[in-house]
Length: 227
Length: 227
Image 1 (tube, rainbow over the protein chains, first blue to last red):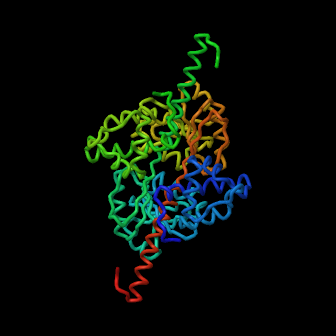
Image 2 (cartoon, each protein chain N blue to C red):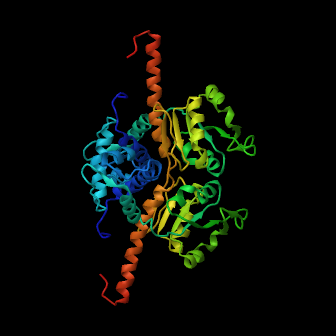
């Protein structure tokens, strides 16, 4: 199972399916879901859902759909969410503090284990039940406690330096919240979170909403019959 | 041009192309890009890039590719980023403060115009150059200053209430950072930002990295010849 290559684009959609399935199970107490319904919730087409889930060995039952509980099990296992990935945050400003106590992480099984900063104000402070440590302690801390995911929550100008600290400490997975590109060796995975992406998508629809409202208004002024 | 329907999935990819193109233009000073290169940077396939860009009326030139500056112009116009969308944040805790000064927003032309909270500690405080106002003033403020995008940065338990405040004030575009679903009327667009999605994708690759390292270690212990 593990050795079969799952396409990168499919991996990126699994968390979206997971969120939709959890919502169906918890809010609507559903037991099964059709590929059409899951597709609608995830914003893709049904053929893509069926193809994606086939990589997990799930094919659904005609007329019944997919068993939600089993799909949840398969997706969490495939994403490695059944394992524990000790995670560190570097940069304990507003964003780092928000991430340290973000409920959406713990809901998905991610536990923030260590916080680092290099400012004397932050070091020693308690944030979300953890004492902020100095960035110089990162390497020892990784060696001792097996931290394996590093989150960059600094301003953009410090992002590259923090990435280098992570790489030097042996961390292979980095999540970068700073709006800056970082360069790392090829055996290190970096994912970038751009908080403005959804705002840009929203802008597209807001523009369309305003265009329709303007057209309606023009129509009203011209005293034309409404459609 | 405007009236042609662009598929939802294409709209969602435009900000990814925009980010890649800006990086090519600014960091690498490139003037043109092939669909293959843009596809690699955006993590999709080249045929999809060509199809997506064809909705904008861009077809590229064989052997040359796409003109980056013109593509940037087309995408920013299509996403409505050439217009000004006054934006308000409700919930001035750590996340709200981080978003109020997030450089990634201003880089994409989004200006945070107003901050609201309902706690007496936050109201009246200056954050990122703005005075935090009481949530009760939201409706008047929307009417006066034409705020049109609302960001929810509260804990999950307050998200629905804030969404209702936005709807009541006439806001049609909501960005929800709280890990909770909100219900709004059908003429209101809500986009949800789930900060854990990239962490889940990273977990998948971290798991694979560890599996490979474990296999290497087993191989070493068995004293088998390396591949």
